[in-house]
Length: 133
Image (cartoon, rainbow, N blue to C red; front, side, top):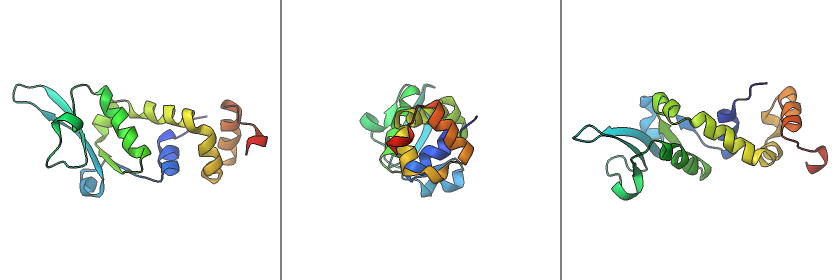
């Protein structure tokens, strides 16, 4: 069974992820790329897209982007990230990892967010006992 980890985790965290540029201003945090004068690509995850902090918001490696985005989502902030960067930094894998690490809390907090079949699958697949609820 295929679960939509992104939807489940965002629902559990009660936050939003935007991919449409029209929603740029709605997001608390923006994740995007910029190029240096000599052609290197840098990755930025910031609250202030007009004045990002070089020390805190700019990343040389794209692998850091997914970790930072998940940290901000976990803190309840909404995030804008375009779909290309989303795919490039493997955020789907991060959502699945987050789900796996927090599955019992997610099921306990929002059992109604799963269909009956999904709930049976999750309890079976992740070893959640009925008594723990």
